[in-house]
Amino acid sequence: NRDAHAFSVLEQINRARTNPKGYAAFLSSHLGGCYSGTTFSPPWGGRVTTAEGEAALQDLIATLNKMAPSAALRLVAPMSECSQQLADEIAAAATAATPRTSGGATPRTSAAAAGSPLSERLLARGKWSGSAGEAVAFGVRQPEAIVAMLLVSDGDTGRRNREFLLKGDLRSAGFGLADHAAQGSVSVITLVTLFARALKESTTVECQGSASEKFQEVLDAIPSQEARAVATDALVQGKKVTLEYNPDGVQIIVEERDGSKQVSRLQWG
Image 1 (cartoon, one colour):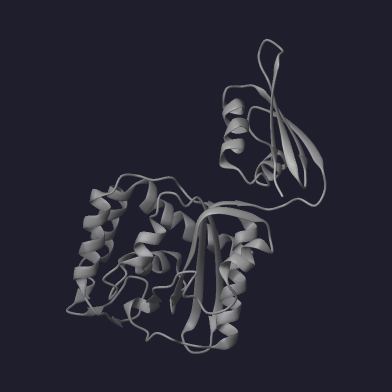
Image 2 (cartoon, rainbow, N blue to C red):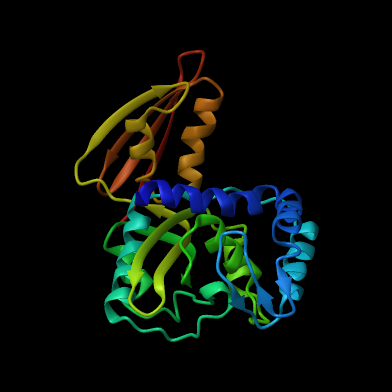
């Protein structure tokens, strides 16, 4: 089940982002002792020859112990479509550009990824802003293995995958997984600061209290973190919020407790 797999991968990343010291302790107890020189025998099975041995794991643990917690990532379905498209493209090409070291994890960013450009795949599904990138792992399928190997970033002195997955301003995520003829599997994690999937029709939704599924769908279509915050902050305060959405903009109406209304408007091209 790709959706369940994606949620599990994201859960592992969010453990490192929201509780870095706790995740460092988990890695120390779970992966410490799995190395014999440069040979890594992980708890999820297999045996891998690494470049750095346990030194890369200890470097990750030290980084996590010094890191302040950051915001959790949120899985966004259209972004998973972007991730899956790239995973399928790489699998179809069956190109194994990097040897199967570091547990099969290889550093990748949107600029370096083979296949269609990330910006092209994102814009085909909606609007995005801020930072964006992708990490690609070969040869591992288990969520714990995918995330641990990307964070360890064995053999990459710049620790690019680690820095990318822990980057604080990235908030929206997608995940894709495909069989790979040479490497066994290819996983793609796509992250951006803000993604909004455009709705095809104008719609109006009202909410007070916890956001309904329909309200959240419309909220996620607004390509502005500030505008979203206006609505969510009002809901937290128990106020009634109305979103009047059309494909070119949105009007946010917040009804105060005294019956007065505050109106915010946002237009986009």
